[in-house]
Amino acid sequence: MKLVIFTDGASRGNPGPASYGFTISDDKGKLVYEHGKYIGETTNNVAEYTAVLKAFEWIEKNVKEKVEIKLYADSKLVAEQLSGRYKVKAVHLKPIIADIRLMAMEFGDVLFTHIPREQNTRADRLANEALDSR
Image (tube, rainbow, N blue to C red; front, side, top):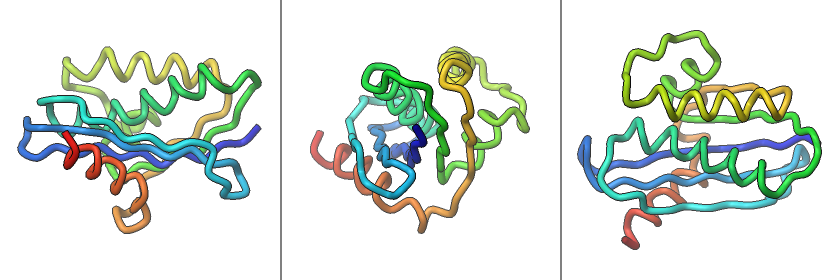
């Protein structure tokens, strides 16, 4: 099974009120699941990684077969660190990144790609709606 994920985190202030949003679609573009949630006061980076973690947790719980994942994020840091091209220096991010990488290994083939914000409108909207509705 092939899945396409778009993720986004939002924080008003850094740190400040924060949320995440993500969409999961099949490889033909059919929406499988989408979700946004307010997560309290935290940094934008934590919100961005939480979006990835929560998308992976949903897949782990709901998809019972091997998956090939293409994940798109408008955070270059997220895409590059999860791909292993950038080192993780922030100590507070290491545990969540370790959890994401462990799940990615269990899934199989996972590709992390940075995209411009303009190509991530749905995940961005979910994150902002969650933040606005707190």
